[in-house]
Image 1 (spheres, rainbow, N blue to C red):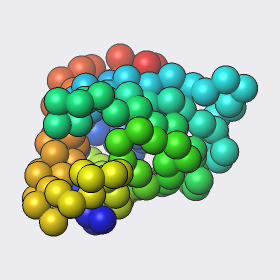
Image 2: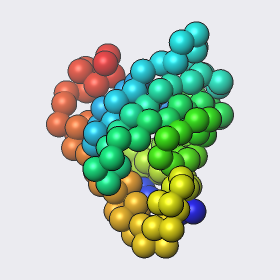
Image 3: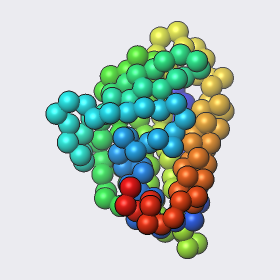
Length: 151
């Protein structure tokens, strides 16, 4: 199991940042991530999303469920089904130095024989999670405030 906790300062308001964290369908800032709402799912706690990505060159798919939601502040999710790993995590935002401090925390558990790689994968996972928040920062700081808040 690999635990991670990373943060990123983004020069945008929490109100402009949080919508890009609370719903996996807006996670287009994550590398190789595609998501869609699971059939019959609604927004908020209990909503489920099918997510697919490339992990170490191999396709991984999972279904995530929103487990906590503090609108405008925090969202947490857990894996309910997966082909390659179990990923439980959260994103939170708070005002900080005229912008927003974004925190991403979680736990990743690789499935099958890949679990043997976990002791070696921790640093890579933490760097990857930090890079994802870096992409979010670049994306949100590059667009005008009207474009982001209305997206």
